[in-house]
Length: 445
Image (cartoon, rainbow, N blue to C red; front, side, top):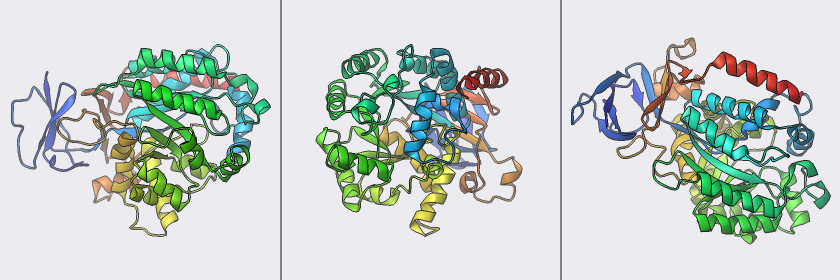
């Protein structure tokens, strides 16, 4: 029950904490106004005068395993469908050891970028990798980062008219049985939970309507969330129209997913009417600006979706279409792409994109205990310094993080415990991790 006072930050993203904040028992106990002092004695004081303090960033869409295939010669400079077709046979080589290293590396990268909660969409289960979600939970626990494990699935392969090869899909019964198992073992719906589970059939071109509908029923029974890719490319729209005789949002409604339990990755190719429908039903959208740019998928209509009522968060997406795992970098890209799409420099601000990465992302994951700096919320914080040359001359510290291109936090706290100190992840040998992961990645050349 010790009380830690983060004193007089250089800047803080929030209101009422200009003089700092007090952390107690893993939560934010109080905000201290400028020139003020904590209301009760503290056990420890941290001088935050060099630090810009943000709520811990929340990543709402990723594919950790893809750290093994960054900048792969067979996939670079391709759009989504040919990119996937090139990589599926390579990803089919995944095994538990290489997968574990891919997860550890992705989570470490995210922590270093100020991310305190990460959702991973894992849908590839070649033989021998049935314990993928357990590995993710173990690695997240060891690093002390919060995780939403989305138990992905694919049961529509090439032989059925889908996109993935037969070797990486599972049958419906196997998928649903393992979803039940993963939920029973790992899903914690309580406030302050470190691990939650969501159900996540991969996409309309890799999952049957039956699997989508049964996943929705299972999620409702266990009070967990639903996640999938939707509206990412025009190819997907054409696939839905040819295969299901409807557009993707109609498909979503037919399978029982059009509700506030659902959040979608990408959400690019929606009409104005579809944005309105998604907003009415409070369907969340994860904006993935970096991946969308790399694959030339298009621009997410963030403003229209938010105006309609959809929570909009931020995601890095897979580390083979990004090709990093850095959520601060994604926030900067969200700013630039948002301004290009709207044609207005004032339409999207630096604070807007930081809110996408914090409060908006937390809403997508159904976490009202995260995403803001306020009393009673979880003490998940990202602290950045402005000591690098890139920040020299910056006058607005919060805007500078985005405009000057911050990429690495100096300190990161999760549930009141420091997980990054002086730019180094606690308990991780970065040189060893780089060497071991690099050796594993060579198997995927």
